Amino acid sequence: MDAGRLCLMGWLLLGGVSVGWAANSEVLRPRVPIDQIEAARTVTNPFPVTPEMLQQGKALFEGKAFCRACHGSDGKGLGMDLDYSTFKGPLPRNFTDRLWQQARTDGELFWILKNGSPGTDMAPFIPLVLTEEEAWQVLMYVRSFGGR
Image (cartoon, rainbow, N blue to C red; front, side, top):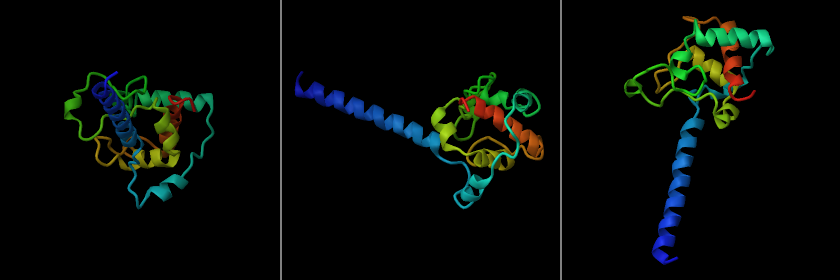
């Protein structure tokens, strides 16, 4: 193989790594403001994960909380016939992404349900749409997409 082809292959491989890293860094970027993230991370789900709680979370995800509209029924972040060109910031989160699931604490996710996600179209849901208990049920269901 000549030096030009070898150089091109190396550039393509490194370019692919940096593009992949850039995508992962966006997924892993916290949505909670830096001055509030430590407090958010200390918050834990006060309810046990049970089949009944997961079922209630699923019903809320697909119904009252209308999470499915943006995040899709499969949790992959591609909801029902939305015009994604109108979204501000990143597309809806893919809840099946294991890296994201591992990086975010339950407290951070609860903070987002309560305050919205800065820089995105994700609005606050607590208390306007969900009670705190319902929010925890939804988060239990969201965690189930990542195998937790």
